Length: 326
Image (cartoon, rainbow, N blue to C red; front, side):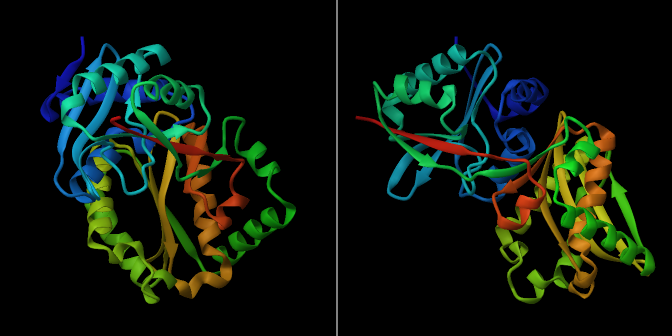
């Protein structure tokens, strides 16, 4: 039987939901988990009605709201990048059954239904497209792909896959940082996420992004989203932050969140005064060392970008399926 859960019940059973998230292969784990989804729902979108379904250990996390001319859209909680996958847990057959039952059960009330964050050309996507596509009109769209570093075989193995110039550059940056007496502070465990973001915002003001008006935090909604996200992660001990300091002042940051053995980087930046020593690369390298010590096996660098290729071992490709009623 399909259960339709309230937000209160969902929040009381988040641990069960996230166990189901961890069962999934090749999805964006941290962005599918509750903290990212709930922060996005609260901060990035107009008010929408949660529609949370469960059948056994299988979950379908949607909400109902408008998108452009469509007034009644079953959509993921986070639609700004559509990284997360709303359908998790159970077997492939159980996920397909839940999807089909919900769409048929809710058919009078929806015009469009969106499945985001599906591994591109995966068995999951093909099954949904073929089976649901027999009843509803289906369109497939390219998702936001993510660069990822593989740490399952250890940090030395990861470093051996980098170019010689890359490794030499890191050593030069380490020497230059030592000469300028730059110190590093690592934050993990339960912490005050709001206080962390206050420090981040102050560093950002002196970064090239802040000084040129290109900072993501210029947007009030994104600023609120990351603040909310870090508060949630900090309370649960899932926030990971590296700060660099010079003469007692913060000059660089890199932060993200974990779930299981997966780390997802959110943002990284530094005071432009220290660009000549490669502080951006160095703080990421320091962070990577700490994550490896913790047993992280996958470092998700986030949305595909050219500068991330030096760090990445693979590109995880995603797609979004959109169904409309015939």
